[in-house]
Length: 158
Image (cartoon, rainbow, N blue to C red):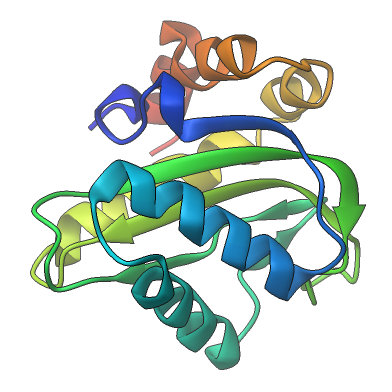
C-alpha cells in the first residue's frame, strides 16, 4: 500500500490555523468529510473517541489521529501542516504541527494497521519531517509524502 492510494492532492492542507486540539479535529473532520462524503460530525466523534483512549500525538510534533467508520469502502487519509503548533497531549508533551488523519472501514483490520505503520515510519524519518516542515504549499507536501524515495525507505523499514 502506497500513500498515494490513501491521500490525493486535495487531501493535503498547508498552513492550517487553529487554536487547540479540539478545534483542529473539527476542522480536519470537516475537510475529510468533503473527501469521503460522510457527515463531519461522525468523523469528529470517531477521532475524539479514539483520543479519549490515549493521545495519538506520537511525539516530535506529530499526531496520527485515526479511527474506523462502518460506511467507508476503503482507507482514507488527510495530511495537515499547521501554521502554529498546538497542544495535542502528545506522549512527549510537545505541541503538534504535523497531523495525518487516517480513517478505515470497520472490516479493514490489516489494511488499517498497515497504513498506520507506513505513516508512522514515514513521519519518524527526520529527513522527511524536515522537508515537510520546510514546505509551505499543499502540492509540495503531497509530493514529499508520496515520493518514491519516501515509499521505498518506509517499505524497507518494515
